[in-house]
Amino acid sequence: MARSKKSLFALLSLMLVLTLALSACGDKNGGKNDSKSGEAASGEGSKNEKPVELLWYTIGTPQKDTDRVMEEVSKYTKEKIGVTVKMKQIDWGDYNQKMQVMTASGEPMDILFTASWAFDYVQNARKGAFYEIDDLLKKEGKGIVDALDPAFLEGTKVNGHNYGIPANKELPAQEVWRFNKQLLDKYNLDISKVYSLESLEPMLKTIKEKEKDVTPFAVDKNYGPYVPYDYVIEKMPLAVKVGTTDYKLVNVLETPEMKQALATMHKYYKAGYIPTEAATISSLTDLQASGKWFTDRATTQPLADNLWSANNGYPVISTPASEALIYNWSVMGSMQAISANSEHPEKAMEFLNLLNTDPVLRNMVDSGIENVHFKKVGDNVAENLPESKNYDMPTFSLGNVMLTYLTPADPADKWEQFKTFNDTGKPAPLLGFNFDPTNVATEIAAVNNVKEEFWAPLMTGTVDPEKYVPQAIEKFKAAGLDKIMEEAQRQIDEWRAANK
Image (cartoon, rainbow, N blue to C red; front, side, top):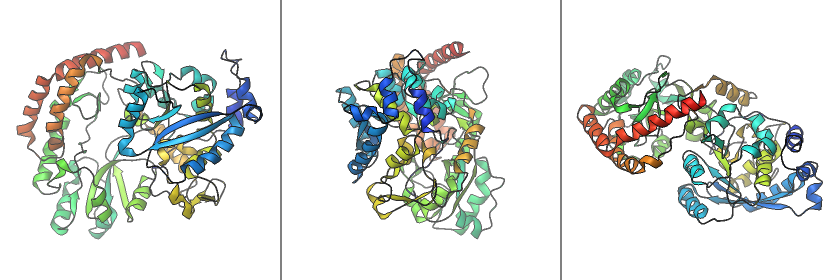
């Protein structure tokens, strides 16, 4: 199916019969009586009992046909596990605020989307917004556990417990330099030896001299030079070096790697390679749509070049800018949690288990009704029909993406490529550690104000680091950065001791 607007990621496929059979063995595993689940797995329980309605909140632009699709989903899940599903979508920009209000007020809900970047998973788990699912995973969620790389569940533990189910997708995060291939070909530029920030310079110079209307290095206010450090809090300067043995926290602005990167960025800014207004640009979408850019940096996944090329309408290629590392934020990029207010947590987990192991259900939720919104053109290959415009969902946010059907343009081994990519990922130093900011909340607020003043201008090269880095360091210290680092170091040391 042509999903040019969707982010497609990874998976391993499991047989539903095995999954549900294992889930139905709760008594043998010392759990609650699962006779109802066993009946539902064979389609018997749902015929004799009133189905449980699950309310599912998720992120994304509300779609015209959502209710229509959920009616079909409910017919399927009623037969399988005795539940029906009602989905409520909240648009991207409204999701955080609306979910905060609804969970705080005790609004009824069963399942909800959460992530490192949307309705903050760690903080809301600590606040008690989510149901602790350790036991549910062992009973009703066995198929999920079997399907996921262990790093997903290990990396999403909060205080030693799981509160959400990560989507089975690409596991590591790897930075790449992306290039507008039309310009590479036009000037016969070779990217085979490009890796470091500094290695871009000869090509940036060529583009600047020969393409007056092109931005050589597309950078916006969200950019930060890649340095081999694992941040305790994203875009705050306290971090641990990749490959560390002592897990000593440092102020990344004081490291030689960051000093060199900022100097290079300022050099590029003065040379005119970076947009003059980079520190205030919110998005590069319009620039990329125009094709008037040469290179930028992005986080990749297998076959990402194909996706980027399809989105832009012209060829884009990439080359690595870092190794593939598994960070907390990469394993928490897309998750489903069960609400602490749910009256049916067991049934919610049964549904999530089915969603993450049954290709029929997963693709119905993702792409709509077969022969209405999409049609299959192979055993696991499908393409969109015109009605798909009424049900265009963000694939990555809905569970196990490795169960989604291939598009006609995808290679047959697409998901094997994802698995290989996942296997190559190395754990970042702080994978599994989640900082508790409670004791330094005041200092974090003050440090965040300093960050807002200095971070974007420094990272985009807009200001001279020789002058502004010392000022930033001084203000960070005055705001309480040392106290935050001391608290974070204590927690890291305790975490390491507890986890050997």
